[in-house]
Length: 70
Image 1 (cartoon, rainbow, N blue to C red):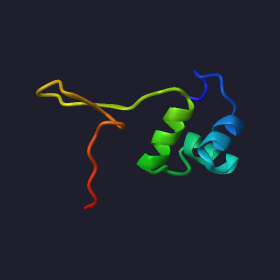
Image 2: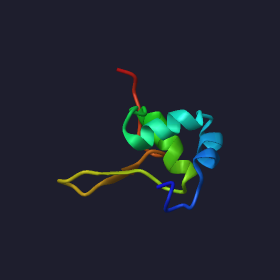
Image 3: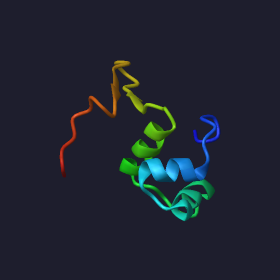
Image 4: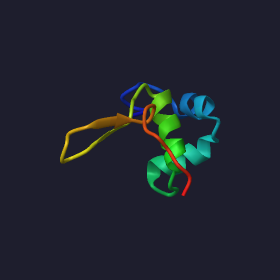
């Protein structure tokens, strides 16, 4: 996403308030981001995250999904 958005690691890390080394770790697979962090990175790069129900084709995105603590 970052490359397609033509952003530097430093641009994304600043927008997401994470260290450059942490972002680098996500990109190389050394570290695993939380879903919340993935949302932040996607947003910083201009992407939306969608969930599609395979049976009903209903679409939800991270802005209209209802969340509950388990």
